[in-house]
Length: 304
Image (cartoon, rainbow, N blue to C red):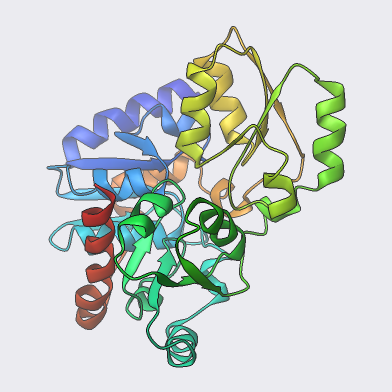
């Protein structure tokens, strides 16, 4: 079976079995082409509430599928590949958050969406890389406990100097692989290119960028910019998508280490199998459904 034939079968089955496919932008082009919504964590969270389909397949990682379930308690949510986790989400748990809150009384606990649903039960509000600055500026409290990604947190801190931050020392293993030496070498090889980077990168790397922003922010910037060459500092799939959408522009991956192996375990056949009924059905305890949804609702409220 060819890729096109498999895609056609998926499109047919989606209608027959009443499925909506949500695909994170780090998925390959062959998956994004058959998805109903493609975007970053925030966009998928919001769009998960808009579908009328009774079944949802998440072509992403586990915390994204859990978030979709929290926002759609009456729908069946499936994770396309059960192995697709998130190393950052595994770096912190509910008990650690509760301890940090005890050590920092009076702070609003803000967690990155890249966390488990159980961890979210212990925080006040959830943020994503695209919404963090806006949401934190809208929080009335000027004391912020930011978890788990301290690199994203440091970038937000620069954008919100009126706030006082405490951080947990977590981070994204993929984005943290980018080195200053790689950026310098890439800039030397492509002197006319702008450097666009995700805020999960180390602060010295982000400081070298022409633009720092979320996955969708990077893509929007590159598509709208009059510039013709860009060095991309996020997962390699974004280079692929931009090459399709902007064939008149050049895109260079800053580091060959920018591969999210958890995202890459999901295949087009995994999506087909999930729509056929063999994906992992996401189930969460009632107390988790109730408590973890509150900070997500707060994210949507404060993020607009």
